Image (cartoon, rainbow, N blue to C red):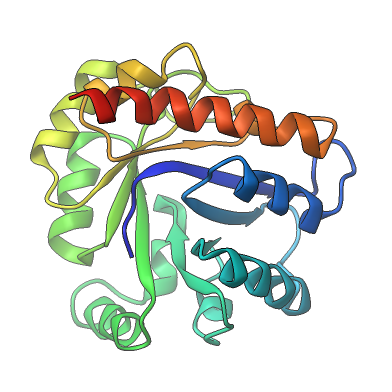
Length: 223
């Protein structure tokens, strides 16, 4: 799968009590290229994942599960892969051979793997040892979506990460309309956002998603 454009994160439970299917539809209509389904406070329900997966399949938009490695491995239609943070890498097994076998299993199942990285050392280790399909890098800016986030890396480190990485880099942390152009100029293949595409209604979510995706794509298309 291609990682590019707006990587929208559907965070559960939603901020405005909207049904997940409603939020997902608005994100898709707004132009999100990839959807990540994220639930930090409770495990994802397989039935919900299946329903949202069908929705994504119908729209031709890949859905990635945050942290839920075992659930992704069930090969639920519409689930294109899994994204793991630094604290979740143990789910892949022990370093070296165990992780290599698990990674091969994911690849054989047609599932992509994304890894969050927070500095250049982590990025190098992730690429060399885990062979991800893409990496998240950040937080580039401070973010309210994760109050206990790692230190801010800034645009200069993001640009270096984009040069060093052999796989697409997704810029994460504090992404919004004001900095989308700067992120694309650094070479990021994609931008991830929760707060900048959230809203009290489907119409607002769709409009914010469209605006953010266009702000990022506008620079890429003009280069």
